[in-house]
Length: 114
Length: 113
Image (cartoon, rainbow over all chains, first blue to last red; front, side):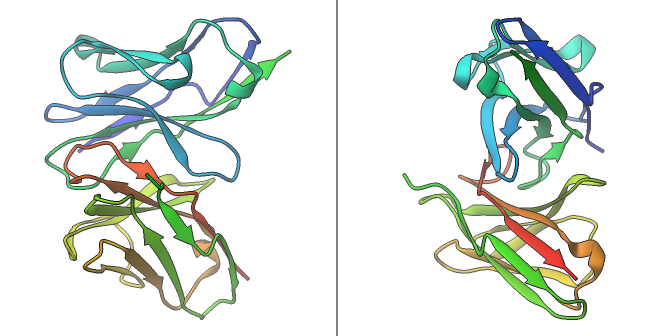
C-alpha cells in the first residue's frame, strides 16, 4: 500500500526566511513523487515532480525538492519565502502500478509573517 | 493550452437528491481522475477513467459513479446524497495516468443540506 506522511500540520515562517516542508512516503515500487500547492477554495497546482534521475528537482515559483531513497523522503525547500507563498502544500506519491491514483499527505499549511 | 475545467463550481443539494459533476481535461489528456477533499479525510481518490474505461477505483460506496466520453470529458454522479458528501470534488487529468503528473481543475464545491 502507498502512503504519505507530512509531519507538520502548520508552519509559520517570516517573509524572506528559508522554508523546508517535510514529506515521507511508503511505496512498494519505484515512486513518482509530487508537490502541489493549494490556495483557499482552489484546485491543486503542481509545483514539481520526481520520476528518476537527479535527486534534486527544481520546480516553479523558486521551489526545489530533494529525493532521498534511503530516508523515503521528498522534502520541499525554498531559500526565501514570499508572502504570496502562504497556502496549503501537499506531497503525493504515484506510480505506474496504480493507474491514475496519487496518494496525498494531509497537507501542511504555511503562514508567512511580514 | 486551456487547463482542466469543472462545472458547476458551486452546488447546493438536499439530502436524497442526486448530482452530476462535469470535468473537461486538458486537450490531449486521456486519463481523468476524481478526488474528494474534505477537512476530516483530506484528499481521497474516487476513480480513474482512461479511454472511456474505469481502470481504478477507490473505497467509496456504489452511490458514487462516473463515466468518460469519447472526447475524454468525464462526469461523476452521486446518488442519494448524504450530508457527509459535502466536499470539494476535484478532477485531475494526465496524459496517460500511470505515474504521469496530474493537473487539477478548480473543483466543484458541493454542499448537501
